[in-house]
Each structure stands twice: as C-alpha cells, then as structure tokens.
Image 1 (tube, rainbow, N blue to C red):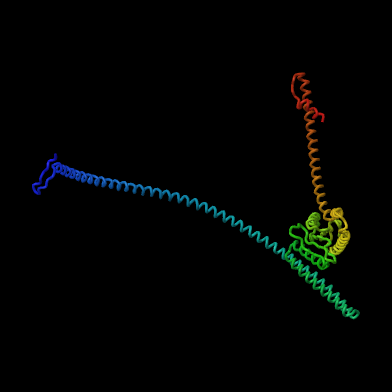
Image 2: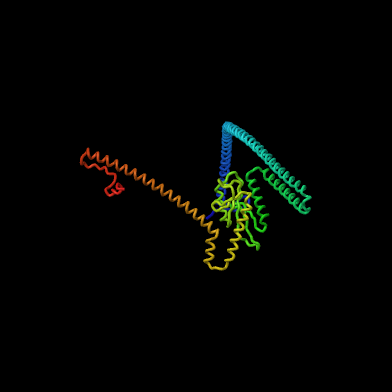
Length: 417
C-alpha cells in the first residue's frame, strides 16, 4: 500500500515513491550533466590535441613534399639537360647527314642538268642539220620543177594552150605536195627520234594506200597487236570484202628476222591473208621485194607495185571461191577451211611449237644418256679396281673369310653390263 504525502504549501497529495524517484532522477541528471560536461571537455581537449598533431604532421608532410619536389625538380632538370643534349646531338647529326644528302643531290642535279643541256644541244644540232637537208632537197625539187617549167615555157608555141595549162597545174600540184610533204617531214623531224621517223613513214604509207585504193578500207591496227601498223581490207566493185593485207613499217638501219614471226602472230590475231613488211633495210643478199618464210618484204618504193599484184591475186581467189559457194555440203566447207590461209597459219604455229618441244625433249634425252654412260663407266672402273684389290688381299691372306664384295651375287648383272 502506497504512502501519500501532502504538500504543506498547496495541499497536493502524492505518493512518497514518486518523490524519491524524482530525487534520484534529479541526482542522476546532475551526474549525467557533470559527466557530459567532463566528456565534452575531454573531447574538446582531445580534438585540440588531434588538430595540433594533424597540423604538425601536415607541416612535416609539406616540408618533406617540398624537399621531394626540389629533388624531383633537380632530377628532372638533369634528365632534361641530358635529353636536350642527346636530342641536340641527334638533330645535329641528322642535319649534317641531310646537308650531305642535299649536297649530293645538288651535285647529281647539276650533272643531270649538264647532261640534259648537252643532249638538248645535240638534238638542236641534229634538227638544224635535218632542216638544212630538207631545205636543200626542197630547193633541188624547186630547181627541177623550175627547169621543167622553163622547158614547157619554151615549148609553149608548139603545144596547145590547154595541154600547157594542164601540165602547169600538175607541176604546181606536185610542188604543193612536195611543200606539204617537206613541212610534214620537218615537223616530225623536229621531235628528233627514230620512232617519229617511223611514224612519218607509216603515215605516208597509209596516205598512199588510201589515195591509190580509194574503195578499199585502210585502218590502224589496235593496241593489242605487237608490231603491225595498218591493214588494207580489199573490196570489189560491189563493196564486198575479198581479203585483208597487214602491213608493218620499219625504218631502221638493220633488218631483224624477229619481225617475221611477230607479223605472223599479228596475221593470226587480225585474220589477215597476207603480211607485208615495208623496210628501209632489206635482208642480206636481197635487193628487191621477195617472200621470206611466208611474209612479203619490200622497200618503200616497191610497196605500191607489190600491193597491186597481191590485191589482184586476192580478188581472183575471192571470185573463184564465190563461184563455188553454196554448191557443196559440209565436206566442201571443211575442204575450204582446210585449204584456207587461216588454217594454214594456225597449223603452222602448232607445228612450230611441236618441233620446238620435240627438239627440247631430244636434247634432254641425249644429255641424260650421256650422263648415264659416264656414270656406268665410273661404276665399271670402281668395280674393276675393287676386284684387283680383293685378288691381292686373297693372295696374301689365303682363304681367310674377308668380306670385300661391293655388290651381292644377285647383282652380277651390273658387272656384266
């Protein structure tokens, strides 16, 4: 049972346990406040000490950091000086090498410039000589034409006026043609190369073929063809193509037999019937046009006469073939193909390849047989000397079992051979 206590001041009643409890709580609060105050003081003191320690350590760290920074900076300065010195030395060597290379290149460039100027001077001299030669020839032609004109003028009274005028026009036309030809040759010759001189001859050849055979087709050979220059497609009066002649123009000092094989290959590529080489230098012991290994060879002055004959023959063959056209079966077609120039050229190429291969195999066979014979002789020499040695040893040692045979008994055939 609780004991109540009454307050003398206000008369309020409360239990005695409550009063004791409040006193204890108050005492505990005071102790707690004192404890908290003490702890706060200790904490503040500890915090101050820690701050001082941190500040001290920061100062030491800053000092060490500054010392390390100074050391690192000094080390970097030393390394940088070494690197700069090394780079400077390397760049200096590189500049010296570059300067040396530039000097060498400059010397080479000056040498090339001197050579170029020398070649240019030689070319100019050749051009001047060629121009002088052309002018001389032109002057000679003019003198000849003037002489003919003078003679015609003297014979004017004995000839009719229209014939004189016609002859005069012809001579004037020839003079103009000679002038144009001389100008064309001069323009081409100024370029100063044998190739251009060959092109001049090729152009003149094409113009001659076009003017002489206006109904035929003169065309340049494509870039895939190795040596040929142009082709003449022959047409009859009905415009039908009768055949084809392929031309190769050469303007060199010496004749090369390889031109023949190249033109044969070009004939097969273009399906041409006849091949003609127009050359300034003829083969040895040949002075006029001739046929060599299936190819016609002629000079520039004989080309038109030769083309007239070849063209007439091609047209006759074409007309003869036309008369038999559509009169036979496949056997006639096969016979026509087997007797054609195309089959002949292709079979000739196959035969030449087979002969070359056969000759190569024969040479290899002869070489191997020679090698086998030589080795067989060497083997016989070895066996013979071994037999002599064996006989000498058996004569000394008697019948003692000494094995000196180089071959077995079953290999006696080697000795017999």
